[in-house]
Amino acid sequence: MNSLTHFLAAFDILYAIFYNIVGVNEIIIFAFLFGVLVDIDVFYGLYKKKAKSHLRTWIQEPLGLVIIGLPIGILLSLIVEPIYILLVILPYASHIALDYITFHIVSYISPLSKESMAVGFIKPFPPSPDSKTIFKRRAGISELYIILATLVITVILVI
Image 1 (tube, one colour):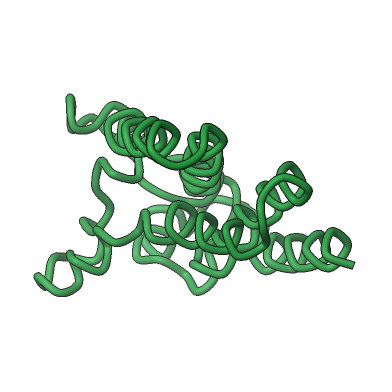
Image 2 (image 1 turned 30 degrees about the horizontal axis):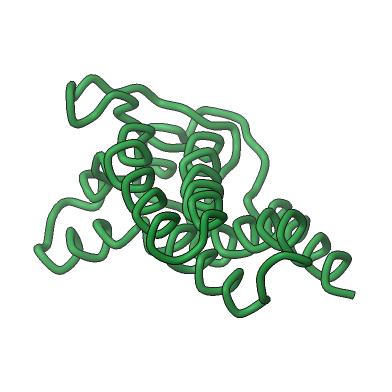
């Protein structure tokens, strides 16, 4: 999924649950940090000029949530506010879930194993290298529908 979809989905989840508990600024910050910046390894891979099909790392896999997200959430919960664990975990988990429903090659137990598999039923927008090659024969719906749905949900929640 693209960054806009990741942000809107994370924002929608956090806003729907926490709008009376924390400020909108905090929701925006956590949606961005843990809903979008989980892809920071992709930008690093682009900087290092890795092949486009090898930009995804274990940070975007379920164990990344356990190894990175959970400790950060616990630490913030102990230092700042107990609710911060959920403000970290929910957008991070939504990022991973969105990646799994989009055409991707995933390594679900990475970094413990490099075993990978093709997943998803949503065609990313713009198309990813994986979706152009490996998934060209698979049917799927366009991510544009997901973007539209998250925009509509955002408008409904905020109004």
